[in-house]
Length: 182
Image 1: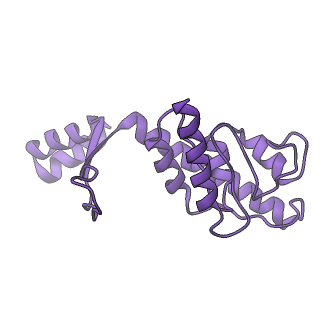
Image 2: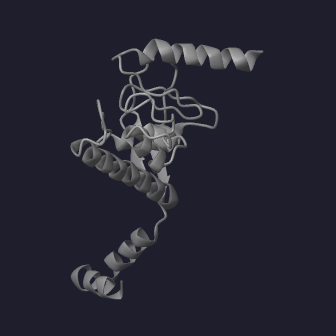
């Protein structure tokens, strides 16, 4: 760190060094996002977002775990230890991690047929996901769901029929609302 600071000072002077040290010590970063097009809404989500260091590291680690889990699943599929279909979530990790970060306790999720990452994020272990993929009893649904039908608490799994998650999700939402009202 001291060598890095001396290099910056020699290149840019003392003011640049002070600015760089503040940046290195910062625990938050702010972003400006594009505003959303609104339909029947007076206001949308904030266009200025702040992220702290702890959350950023957690999100990065979560994305890494999902990617590594999916790499392992891909290898198992190539070795023919996963039978049938294996719809990997590689490249889409940030979608699930970002959406999970915005969720509150008690929120439910349903997804299409790429559900391994969601299953892990919502409570299953990596071992349970990989066991499920290989048809083992130790899987999160005892080896019966495979790649497309994994479930955990408040996660209503994937669905092998493209688009089927929309009416199923509406039914889950109605059931959750019905239970809260009564």
